[in-house]
Length: 151
Image (cartoon, rainbow, N blue to C red):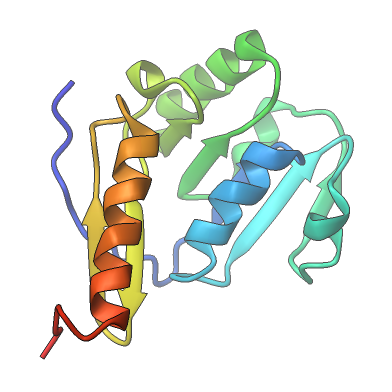
């Protein structure tokens, strides 16, 4: 797969995270650094999601739930439901990321580091997420140690 690295303007873009478990929470932790317009939809939520202060919708997913959103993360533990969400989101011309399945995704989320207005991203086209995170963490360490300057 060949993903083009871009910086997406999230102003006036509503993000829907479908799922309420660990994967949904991990995606949220990345996305919430760039926008506050995030809503969760699931039948059950981790306590961390409920205590985040972000809107939650407790229900089973339906196609109409996509209305009004620009970006969708399919983060359920049901691969067939994630595939259904992907097809329905794409039919509505929405950007969709099927977590844990880059081949079904319009985009993948790189490991990022945000310092003021500078964002550094390390991606592997979704093929080696752990390696991307290790490299990102090394970059953060070099910045913290003063070896790498963002000036």
